[in-house]
Image (tube, rainbow, N blue to C red; front, side, top):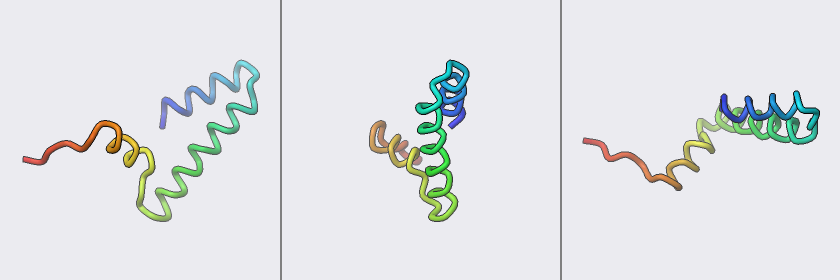
Length: 56
């Protein structure tokens, strides 16, 4: 999340307000979904891409 917010901050500093706003809205939506449902979309996505770690 910190990396995505840093990208939004850089876009904001460069004057690309629309893209920065879209990225910030995406992060806010993900945090609200996580708070309301205890489901984190980014963790779900990483598990789909990289798989989950085996428990020993």
